[in-house]
Image (cartoon, rainbow, N blue to C red):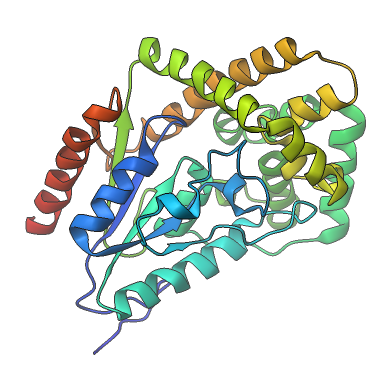
Length: 320
């Protein structure tokens, strides 16, 4: 077996990585399971909130018993008080992919966290970090609000600011940190260039179908015990976590536990914020010319059709 040098240490004969991407609640997990079964694959998670141990209900993490015996990687790698790191994820997930291919199997990357997906799949170099500078920027975000950081970024790097949501403190801090350390704005955005052969398939679903599905998902999460899950995670340091405490579903439920929101208000706010997140996720993938869009499953009976469409895209890419 020969290998070539590069970020993934990929085998020369390794198959293209398959990435299943798209907005939350579009059916990525169901389609990825079917693809993994058809392609003798293993799944690599690229949903940054599913890295966290115990954040199960609010992230719609697939329970172990529903994974069909298919190995899943990059789930439950962090405690809620820890900060997720794109650089750490890139290194560890690329190692997972290399190991999957060394076993003669296919890597299926699944998620909607655009920056993590790009860092994993694309040529993406990381400038150094400065813990003191980062801590100062995070303190400013807490004291002044993330909007202040977003305005500052927009003044020096409008292109980056246009692609980073004003509430995404982690990405705002990192973009400003890179600019301060390197004096360059170009480093804050990745290029559209795969680091190793890959095919990216995005699931598309009309908002008139997706929005009610999100509402139903939030209701189900609430009934499954989201409040108790957040209460338990609070005892394990959720409020100290820079990333985890801001996750959709968890931030709102913490406010509910503080008495700021009643149950109905909390559920509606989670659904509202999830719908907003879904639109941002779709907007992230739209400009990428490499993405192959297919119709997401509109209901459970439609999963087989969507999975067949995805598999056809993989076969076409393999044959190209």
